[in-house]
Length: 90
Image (cartoon, rainbow, N blue to C red):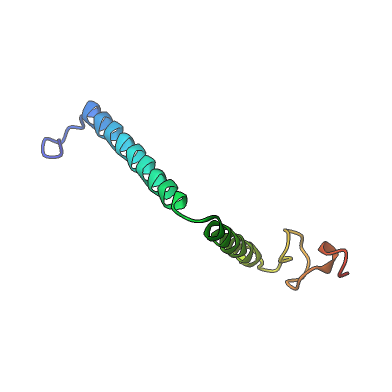
């Protein structure tokens, strides 16, 4: 196809379909593996993982987009923590 200088749209469509099918199969297997791994954990282990992931998500949220903004929301407050978001601490 490349040597002849012609683009075979049908062949490209087949390749695209094949890529989509293989990506779908790969994702399905990846999710199955993840489910199987979680099924092997005890409830205490699952709770520890959930706590760790929640803490990680919170830290990530606190550090994203804080350039010149409040660390809690998107208001235009100073970079320090805006205590108005915490009624008990204000």
